[in-house]
Length: 419
Image (cartoon, rainbow, N blue to C red; front, side, top):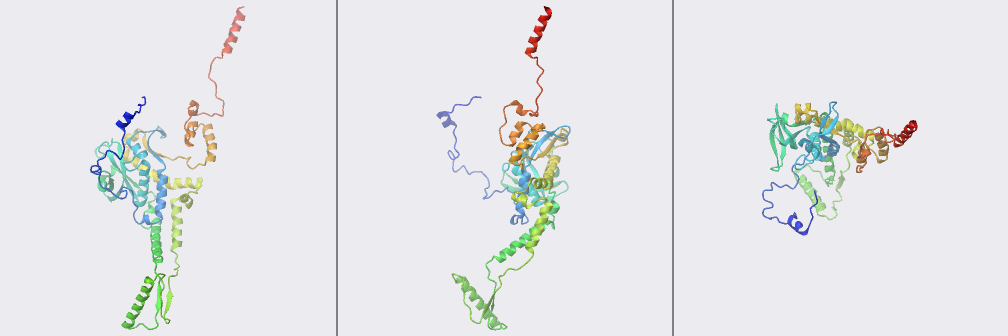
């Protein structure tokens, strides 16, 4: 296909500008409901958005979404063979719906599951009706909040991109993926470590608000005994007078009588609330397999490996197993179709170790040179040998070809024999 010559005439004929040629009265017609914030964005519940728990959920969601989930085909030994180009794979890798990429969709699933305890993966657009046939392909998916549980159905709240609102629908259980948090006992149980930590953090917020409310906490000792109603009214008037002096003064200065004594009570009150929060935080981190170094990005490779194996892998396995069970029929599974996740082991490898790893992988014929070049961000080489699995440190056997010099020697020998 030759490139079309761009002339002034073709530019004037085909050019388009986003701000020109728009009817101002028709532009905003039938666009739909508008919001000042994104309506489909997941919002945490149970007060989680007001505590440091959100940072933990967000970290787990980011790390889980960084792992690639694909619709694949396996061989007879259940080993990865190839990626299947399907609508389901497009949802998992490219575009899950109108508003989310595949990676943002996985992060939405994980954060909603950690927050609510369970989440529904709802196929919105499919090629056929899932309630009639199982031979359908998924074109778009969204996460849904499970509101009610029935024997064979669930009521979910899903964002409808056609109307711009979240709507409640009842769907069969065998057509939606229902993923329960594998760490439910630690995070979502009413008296779990996470819920206790959230309650303590909310109490700490209340104490901080009280201590920073701007109150003086003064006790005024008047020079007379307050026993009668008249004396009580006189003391109340005196208190209001001092309040008015402080409120109306530029620098907050008031005067008192020489016989009056003022005692200030806004001293710090000792409690063990912070110690309890620190204890619950350390316990939660140990139960989740998370350390402070993981959150601030200073964890070593062994710590990250333990984190991925104890925290990320169970979450991804729960998501993948449910998708495999609900979105792949028995026929598809018998055809060796599956849904698998793949974590790049080179993401955490420092640059100074890449060369040694590349040498070992190519020498032992595990990876080709072009595959190593892709990892370090270089374009593949055009040399055909760069795509071969062979040890370049060993001499390769030559092809069995006849040497021309041997033919010449043979001819001389034949002539000598004839003579």
